[in-house]
Image (cartoon, rainbow, N blue to C red; front, side):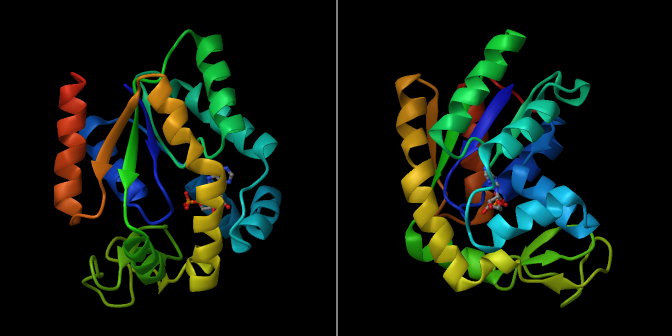
Length: 220
Ligand code: AMP
């Protein structure tokens, strides 16, 4: 099963990808997570990526495509993968097609998370992440039982630099301009599936499950 999760920032793609990854054992592949880890580790990639992330802009395609190619062609991904946050523009989608052609594989579906703008802003601005392990919470919808500390590792919960309101607005504009055309790209290929991401977390999970069983894709 090779899945692409599409949708604007704050749509809940990452949360749903994590849940599906637990259920199916398929790796959750997210360039955003790779970049955030590189920033935490202080690597050259992290320093480069941070400039773009803090400005709410996309990291250049050559960097991002290289990272994703390495991940999805690794042994870990031999049974499939859940791509969350990639592709994010037409060039990246074409690069993904090329990688699939080279490996003789194909994408099974692109799941688009449809969410209203007010909900997107509220979700991003209220999101908190663990500075140590990257686990994600929301001040209202999914608070940590340990207050300002991570339930998993006890690390401090902080707001992502790119979740400040001004940057969120910029990321939404980048989404509209560069990523939204991918909905049509995958529709034309007959791969597009839509879920209503405006609902509570568990209802979205149920809808994703229904889409996958419709495709004949079961859980582990
Ligand atoms: P995310 O966690 O998916 O919201 O990604 C956080 C940030 O990482 C984005 O705002 C971009 O700066 C960068 N990023 C994530 N995915 C991509 C991508 N496919 N192409 C370029 N930049 C990306």
